[in-house]
Length: 419
Ligand SMILES: Nc1nc2c(ncn2[C@@H]2O[C@H](COP(=O)(O)OP(=O)(O)OP(=O)(O)O)[C@@H](O)[C@H]2O)c(=O)[nH]1
Ligand SMILES: [Mg+2]
Image (cartoon, rainbow, N blue to C red; front, side, top):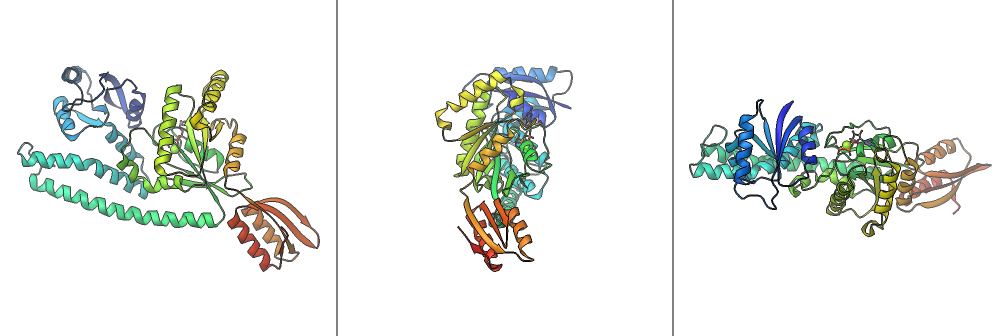
């Protein structure tokens, strides 16, 4: 494992350490300088800069990386790398490196590459500026010419990737329309990274999505049918949220996040086991993201990992969140994806949030085809009652589009709609 140190202007560092750990860095020390705004030139003050330099030089083993818990301007980054003589990553670069390592499918790879190119753009601009003013020998062992070329290449690549992503997005859109038309309800998981979204998907479906204690394990969406349900509900896993992510990184994942925007119901998963102020902050970040994404459908707050806190703490937290005025309109469930705690409550919350269902009763003559028709109705609707006589009478509930389909096929079989 490689060694890293963390430099931060705020005392909350567990998340940045978690990010470094996810990238397989062992954080050996943390330097905190309490100041409200970063130094314009060097992010941290001169004294701290030298203190860290000394620490790096004196450390018996090598320090492989300095992680800055914030966003560095290119000029600050150049200065810090020069001063310390080691690689320096700011928070966004750390996150993008994690994304790069975790991206498996083509769409995720393209999305990450797009975000990386956007990230690199101002750094390359700075390099061009430096090369022109003779301050820097050039970039990638080249001179000014190559730097200009590289900048042009970035622009071309960005355009090409955006086109490719657009075409993948269109295919995704087609699939989604197809599923909706097929009568499926779409339910999406959303929430802060590591909240337990994929664990929930695996629990509620026959899914086998990777679950890890690391951050951003999921970068691609997975859609599966909810098991053991009489209603056709598809559940989609999505990429996690994190605070202070610039909009251009989020934009790169646009099509993935669209799955959340178009869902009939969004399950907003929250890890309720962390310190209460952290839980509240992550909940606020996540709710803010849902607003940015433009979610208009019902949101169910799924407080997960209840197994990790005592009953007293859980009772306190249930009351705490139920008393919050700004959450008043939202359904809440307190569950554990690990030990199936309160999973029935979750099912109830999902079903009662689905767009309204219509009830219908049909009557079809008993023929060779009628049995397969009834099986088909069982597959796509929630059957309430079936009686067999000279006719088959079926009562069911489903979405109005599914109802239209059933009625049309019923008429093909010389059936009738009773009410
Ligand atoms: N104790 C406990 N651990 C849980 C529970 N749900 C999930 N976990 C653990 O939390 C970690 C993260 O779970 P994931 O399901 O990968 O979380 P995620 O929201 O999909 O995370 P990303 O895809 O990385 O954004 C894993 O180590 C899980 O085993 C739970 O109810 N209780
Ligand atoms: Mg996941």
